[in-house]
Length: 238
Image 1 (cartoon, rainbow, N blue to C red):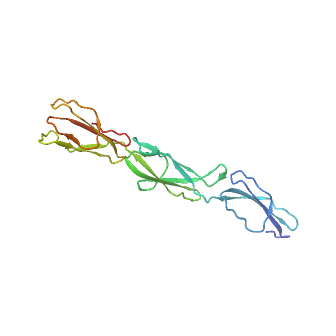
Image 2: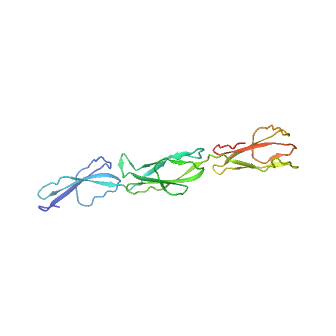
Image 3: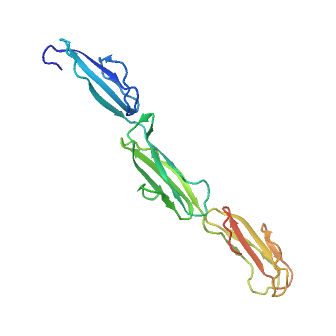
């Protein structure tokens, strides 16, 4: 606006950088609305000249554009773990070559529980294969698509049962079945060793990998030891 001789022209020049460092281009005569479509922090200089040739002191404004959601990374270890561990989440929004609004909040939930605002490393100490979901929002309220990961923890050895007649005399062959149970990573190996002495004195033979029923078809008092190992190496006491 100019109340006296009237405006003659308006010109502007745009920042070509997109960061907090301003690097303006050439002056351009203003004729229509200036479009900003690319994320970043852009300076814009502008002034006007009236019909008498008076030039306005240059104005500088800033256009802050952020249409892009942040990115969150995690430190979730791959595969089953045998000891409790921590998960760290890190949010990033923009980089040295392009300024965006910056991270605002990061949230997570475990096993579809309630969302929790992330503030420090998350301890995973409960056995199981559980979903771990997380995302972040920036200052411009862009929200990242939720990341869906899994935390796998197995600190407990498997359990093996048998169908023998413990400490009970029987008048028929014994076909012993060993059954491994592991609620988390799963059973990997079951093994056994048989007593080779028919008396109350125990003298074990070598360990054998269990694959089918163990047949005991000779008279005597025979001990049998057995245990199982799960897929992450937790081994049950014999």
